Structures are given as structure tokens and as C-alpha cells.
Length: 266
Image (cartoon, rainbow, N blue to C red; front, side, top):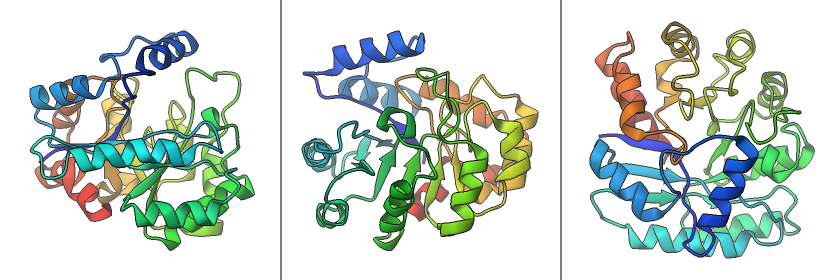
């Protein structure tokens, strides 16, 4: 079984504008067009059984409307062979944060997504810490963009040092730092946050990290805390599967990374 723990899709009415804006900001060329149909076709081609979809609530007043869309995707794919599972979008500056979490839990979501750059906060912001605390209290997974974002290259809002400070304060059990701890800051990841009990996903690291460094981080953080992920539509699912398959780690470690760790979380 293969679970891709980090993907994105957009409603048809906004997908073209959203993808165009992100391409202009990042100067990146995506592998897919951001549509639900394209992700499902990719999963069928590559053998991915489930993709976790991570919506980002860029407006603190519009979390509920975003989550209604996410809930509709979850309902649509219940029991399907190639399934999508949407997490909820949460903005730390939502005015009714505790009530928002009650609604999220009531709708059956398994986790939330935070993006410091697109949402405009630093990872050690008290409101972000409160959001993570509420997620932990409600047994929800929190996935956070960490490290460099190519659309916001002048400032990194979620660095390994900020992650270390938050991890020491909160001691979270279900916190996933995307992009292997901090995108393009992997030497700092090795020195600072490996072994703290945080989960790392592998989204968008291929081919930007060497095999040797990837294996070192897997060993230092523990294979039981690594989640296979692609950041589709930005990376190709089949190429990223092959990237993990070629690593010098055991079959059991690959099995944990591809699905067992994700199933334990969700």
C-alpha cells in the first residue's frame, strides 16, 4: 500500500487562477494541473492508494467554506480504491478557533494543514502554538509547511530553530513537519530537530536532496517518523516512489514510510 501524505487540488472554478498565481510566485513548473481528476489519474498510473489533500486557509474568515469543500471530497471518495482524504484548513488567526475545531471534529476530519508563509505568521507565534495544542487535544494530525517556500524566498517563517522551540514547549505527538523537517535547510534539520518525536514528510525533496543525506535523516529521526509525500501537483508521484525505492534502507523501513506510519496517524 502507498499513501501520499501531502498533495493539493483546487475546485474547478479557481484552479486555473490559483495555479497560475503560484507558478508566477515560485517560478516552478508543476507536474499536474491541480485538478482532482488529474491527481486521481496520477494515482492510478503510479499505484498510489490514497492521497492526503492539504487545503490552506489563506483567509481566517473563510475556513468553514473551505472545509465544506474538503468534506465533500471525503464523502465522494469513501470506500474507493484510489481515494482522496482531505484534511481541514485552519488559520491560526480565525476569530473562533476553539469553535472551529469543534466543527472540524464534528465533520470527521483526521488532521489540519498550516502554512506560515501563505497564512502570514511565524511558526513560534503564540496563535500557531495554540492551534497545534487544540489539534493535539482533539487527536488531529497537524501538517506544517517548513523551511523555504519558493514563492517567499526573502524570509523563512518556519526554521529548524523555531521548530525546536515549539517542540520543546508543546511536546506534540502528531505534528508533521513537511519537506523533511525544513525544505532546503536539511543540515540544520540534522543538527537541530532530528529525534524529537516529530514526523517528517518527504514532499518536494526529490531531486533536491542527496541520497546520503536523506538516509542520514531517516536514521536520525527514525523510519517510524517518516511519511512518503510528493507535494503533487509540484512533484510526480511515480518518480517520487522510485526515489524512495532506491534508497539504501530496509524493506520494512520502506513499508513504514510508504504507508504504515500514515495509517498509524490517521
